[in-house]
Image (cartoon, rainbow, N blue to C red; front, side):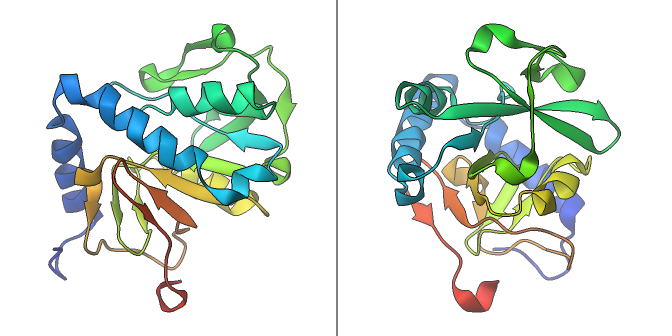
Length: 195
């Protein structure tokens, strides 16, 4: 449980420590369980374009879900860092067009087709920490803070290990909450009063 005096920096430290504490041998099992839950979301039945991400070694990896989404015929996009707090979104038909970008993240190479944020139906979003009301704390770079408001009609899905989910984390008015939070063991949606 979070103390009222705790700020986002404290939460990032706790979230990173929790993420780093996931045993290497458990990571793929947890990623598979979370991918199964993610793929069961009813909103994916009508989705055409899904935004995913290239996971860092510490993050839960959506690669299994991404492969299945492509198998189902959905188009998958990934973000590319193009400036401070700026992401562009690019269609990625297979992972061979992903290259290491800033911060060691896998991102689309510059020649992949750009897609409009307003065309995204479902966005799978990483984070450092989340809470049971589906609020998110990221790395602090502001990239997703700028992107999320542009996803005008997308279902925004946070993806995390269970240990990254806290009772309550601090949020500011400009913070965009997740519509759904998926972990290996549960799928959370915010209650109306939490929005």
